[in-house]
Image (cartoon, rainbow, N blue to C red; front, top):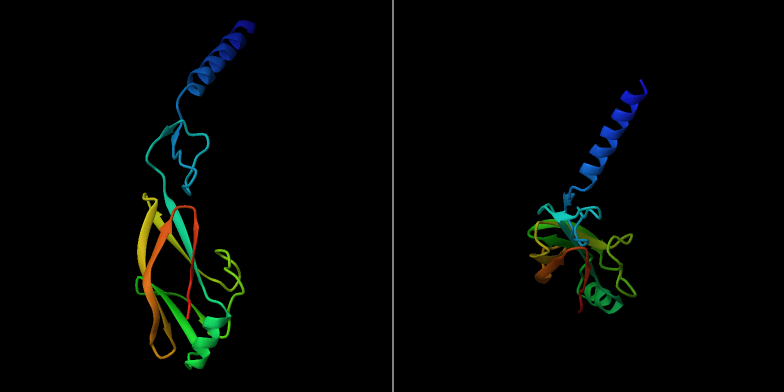
Length: 147
């Protein structure tokens, strides 16, 4: 009976030793949302995400109000991503995800950066700003709208 237990224990230890030497595959890029710190071999499974926050200060707010703009609607690639009252402004750049900020998060797939078009319109549909937002993996890009 003792020799059977010893044999089973030896087999179990040998199996553990054999498999612990195998290279774990996974995403090895720490900028990726799917980063695996235990991976020893990159398997191409990295997926990325980037963020932008759009903001404006008091001078822009006052300019918008003086131009009879009441609300702003924010679009990225033609889709609404947020809205705000023109009277609400920031004294400095907010961080991505900060309460009441216009933060846009984009899934970038397997690439580390992508560009998207944006526009900001008032309640009448008048376009005040438009351009390109660059999204970069694991970063918070900030764009200030100026009057």
